[in-house]
Length: 259
Image (cartoon, rainbow, N blue to C red; front, side):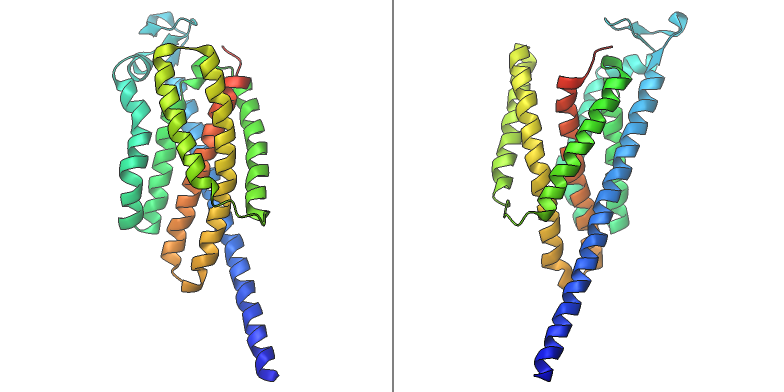
């Protein structure tokens, strides 16, 4: 009996350690993601400020909405360099992130995530030329509230939603194909449908990734590989960051007010 009580006490203590570790792990995930969002916002704001001028004599180009661009703005928004700005984050995700996780230290992975967040900020800076600052802020708040609710549900639900992953990823691929097709068709109805479906897909991915982060930690916590767990936290932060960012962009198509 005494031996059984000892085993039960040890098991309870171990479970308590895992719960405390999980809370710290999730705090690291959300904290890293929040810092990444801040870097993105600051980079987007700073780049858009450098790209626009109110001095006609300093303007290198003018947009249809009346915005005057500096030579820097003309280069990143109108010249072929804009393709580098647009595609650099994708290249980082598909070509660089996996290698970084395998070969770099946890600190290197964290630095890579923050560099990616800065690249996204540069890529997104043009939204300040298209939408009002108020509508951007309003959409961000709505996205943050929706994200918090979805992530909380993904963390607390007892339902296994691991089967959502492959279905939602296939949805993302279909969404990308549809967006490429609509670049040529320029159909407002198709763009509306893409935006609505995009919000739903990334809402689902937010819950899915949150549960996956939780389950991954619980499955590997007993092994005690802190370096691996740190990398897993940054990888989870990246997945949630991308889900948040895409929800924000698709919602902005609905809620954004043009300059």
